[in-house]
Length: 84
Picture 1: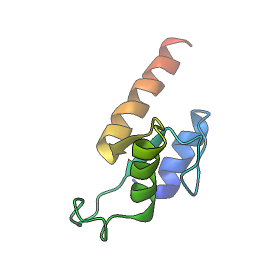
Picture 2 (picture 1 turned 90 degrees about the vertical axis):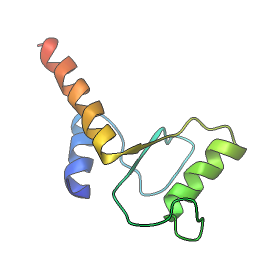
Picture 3 (picture 1 turned 135 degrees about the vertical axis):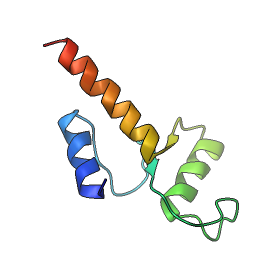
Picture 4 (picture 1 turned 120 degrees about the horizontal axis):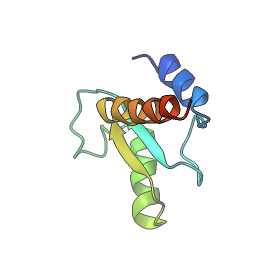
């Protein structure tokens, strides 16, 4: 799934796409990337910011994989269909 496709799905489900981590961020989808996630120097800036906010500011941010995102939106679409 491309970033544009994921953003379109989020918008269709009345979610908000953000270009950076803010106080309103609740979920960060982490795409596949071959890095050592235990090494802070190799982590994407958004992941570092999300982990900082979660740890230091007690912000409730879920970091999920693309697979978890697809599972989440599938449940949302199913719920929408059931309410039609």
